[in-house]
Structures are given as C-alpha cells and as structure tokens.
Length: 165
Image 1 (cartoon, rainbow, N blue to C red):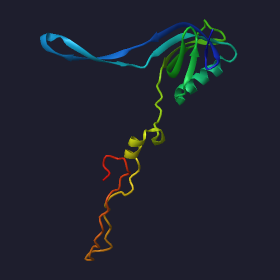
Image 2: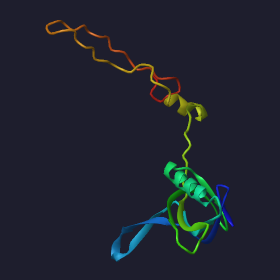
Image 3: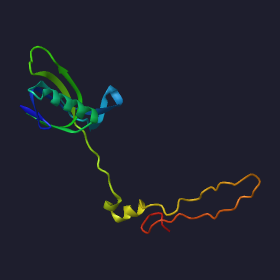
Image 4: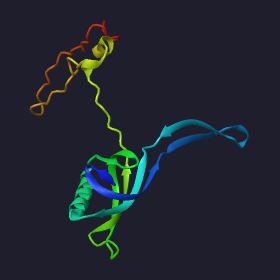
C-alpha cells in the first residue's frame, strides 16, 4: 500500500521520469555542438486502485488538491513531493467498493525571496531606497497662467555606493 498525503491507495505501477533539455548549436562540418544542459522538473505517473468506504472522499480530496495547486506527498516504492497535474478514474464492474485510477505528479521548485537585510554592506548600499524621486512635472491650474519654476533636486546616494560623490 502507498499513501498520498496520508490517504491509503493501492498502486500497481509507478513510472518516474527524469529529463533534461540539451541545447545544440550547429558548427563546421555538419556537427552539432552541445553546449548546455538544463534540468526539467521530474514527474511520476502512478496507477492503481482506491477502494474502501472512504474511496469517494479520497477521490474528492485528490481532485480538490489538484484544482487548488496543493503540494502533495506520495510515499510508495518511490518518495515524491509535487503537484497533481492530472487524474483520471475508471468506474466499472471489476471494482465493487472503489475504482481504478491513473494520476500524474510533477515536481516543483519554490523560489525563496532574498532580503536586503541579508546582503553584504556594499551591495546593501547600492540597493538602498532612493531618497529623492527626481524632478516632477507640476500640473497647471489653467491656460494663460505662468508656470512656476521648480528647483531641480539632486539624487543622493548612500556612502559606499559607487555612484556616491
């Protein structure tokens, strides 16, 4: 038996897949040069049966998790954490108290935000907020009235910045 987010399912086939993108550039003598390899997200197809009194609730949970984009944890012969990208069920006379299913899981990577507080001091000084937003255009109150001349303000940079004077 395998579990998917703690729910028991009977899995007959697990089919993990790992792929890469390989870029090739044409060079002399009709030979392509491979110059870059980029890892694609892993995926896994599983198929089997969901049986028991709570089969309908498990099916609904899986469909809701897929629609919501929830990260699920599969624990069978392989351990896999990712999103459910597709699920199909087959309800026929062979399974009395459940159904057969096939599902595809896809690995995801979650990016973490970087914060200014964690940057080294010279870089932190460069990304500090701008003190002045520069010259702004004023709105005229009507035709024929003279425009007041606005003083030009210089942008101030923090000490340590390569643009500081």
